[in-house]
Length: 265
Image (cartoon, rainbow, N blue to C red; front, side, top):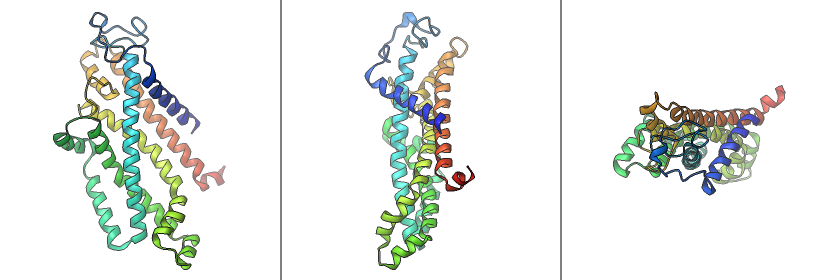
């Protein structure tokens, strides 16, 4: 958890710093300095248009994280509401909601983004909606499973015995006791959201140029792999490091918040 949290903290700090300062404007082109290797023109070199790679990486970090966090927040909130509602009502309502989640699961986020792009056009909103749509059934299933366990606990039975409504029980008793599982899932899904956003940007369905993203940097670099391999290596390492950090953080939180793991220690 410490390793993952440290990596995520560094990435968040870089993303926030890019809002205030970058070595050069990320869209500034200097053709005369194109394809310069690291440390010869800037810390991380320049791309095929002479743009500073470090500045693009910093701004790309903000764009990737902001899209991922927004999409997971929207999808996680909607999915959690769906899961808690299904656990409270049960019956036909639960079956209907879960079948709707199955339909969404059948459409990968990349395919969803391609369909949305046909109507909305590529951009930040398209990426957020596509990723959030895929996150809803993920959180709905997890929330439903954990909420059903909570509904069988004695404190819920006591709350029902004194006449509390299902809504009040869900808000006061069920949700606080499953929040730790939701938080763990949020951290894990953030890594997946970053990876999905990179894939969408690689296909041209993410943020519109000239705003840099790690995925678009990879797409632009594939033509210059022989001449400037660092153009692909650097954003690829950034994506891998970001996903690794969120996964490590999620695994660490799960171990810390799981009473069975605590008993083993």
